[in-house]
Amino acid sequence: IIIVFNSKAALDSHIINKISSINEIIDNGTDTNIFIPKQKLNHIFINNKLINKNKFNIGMLARFHPDKNHEFFFKVIKKFDLITKNYLVILAGLNINYSNLILMNMIKKYNLEKKIIILDTVDNIHELIPFLDLNVLTSNSESFPNSLIEAMSCSIPSIIPDIGNISLIIDDCGFIFKKDNLTDCYNKIKFFYENYYKNDNLDLLKTKNRERVIKNYSMKDCLTKFKKVWN
Image 1 (cartoon, one colour):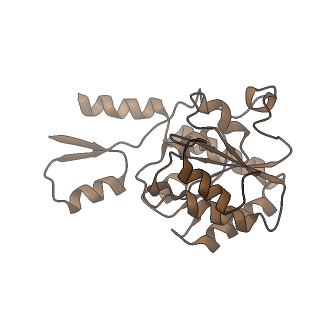
Image 2: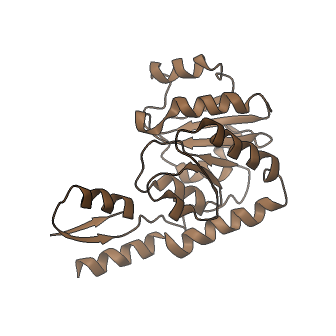
């Protein structure tokens, strides 16, 4: 039996459970020809006023699930709200909708109704990501988050928790906070906002993100590795 894992973290978990097999690690890949940096602002998300290009747009692209830790994210944003009002939060993913009363109550609890845009599942997510300024993930558990490399491929920097193999994926192209550490996550967002957002440092960081995905996490390379295992 050959079992293919999408990260070393997933393989390590498999070994702990003492399942006997031949193991291969093949990192997830993304289509770098689809997930590309924005070319122009004449776009459905701009035209429909879902995104304000004059605001600091923070994205969290994750389904609604306890593992994704949305309430932690809202606590961080509430704290960030104390230093600036010049931002919007864009939420997208499965069950991210107005019918989700648990989600809506969380947003109301932190008085963020006017700061959050809810998009549910977005089929053309590759058209949304390039218009974010920052991608944030606050998960409790991850193996290899596709949303991270999709954002990186679009040249969007990320702030993410130190879980799974995330630190190996992002390297020096983004910012890592200690899991469940609200202050650390807030400080990383604040640091990015004050030192990178609309700053000369940003272009280099954005370029590094895309270059890293093209070099290490392209769909083409992923498929090549699978073919080698298959053969």
